Image (cartoon, rainbow, N blue to C red; front, side):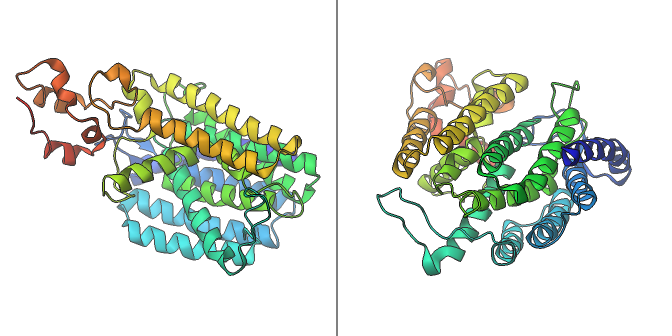
Length: 385
């Protein structure tokens, strides 16, 4: 509990202090393109969260062994994120560094996923594929948290709910060696959300930025690996439910981009928070709905663990949920928008240019086109007149 209080207070204080410095050094995220905020906002939340966890672990004398290796690699991701926020690094550069740091965590901090569980009836050991699979899973987790961070408080709340589920499982399993870091993570996320979520402030004081989402994704990925190890012995499929909304959103978006032969890393408006926004949800309602959904998914995961539900039920129920989400929100049907709640409306300027001479519905000629980024849409406005 001490780690929770320390990290929460340190994070809140650092945000207040670093916010002023960020304005002076121009470490701010300015409104542009797909970004929905209206004011330049400092991106030092991730830095504050990291140092808060670091201080809490130092006070608790827990910064050693695999925790030290994990936090060292997390520090490197914080630096990478700061550079990316400031200068906009290339995808290939970010991916190479992420893969290297993730590999260090997997090998040096006991982050390897060694088996897939009994989802097909018998345990599936990964053997020589354990490290490559773990790297893929970790990098996917890092980018899932990064991609869901599109609305004030979204990534923070997703991570907080996941950590609550992890904390519950670790406590029940008696994995005391994981609890101090768990408390520190919960505290720093609460401290951040005090000044980022619109529940407590009129508008976000800071964003976590890439410096926050990257290291959060790394630590969450490490915890996901730990719950599959002997100290907890959860089925690996349980990780799908604990990660929840960010994982579902990332898998759906990646599949959709691949289906339309686009780069998996090319930004668009296909993420779930954009879909809800264009369905008329306000930012607060958007975050509330997705937070409740995340709470339900993580809660189901915890219940599955406590009830010792077979792995095949855990896995295939998640697959069915994934298929339902994709068919409901990512199909390409045209026609009445009420038939497809995932219709993503064009920005106001694009709509005005794209109304044509026909009926108003013509501006939604092909819903698959509405997922394109602004530049793509501007080149793709031809069609019926």
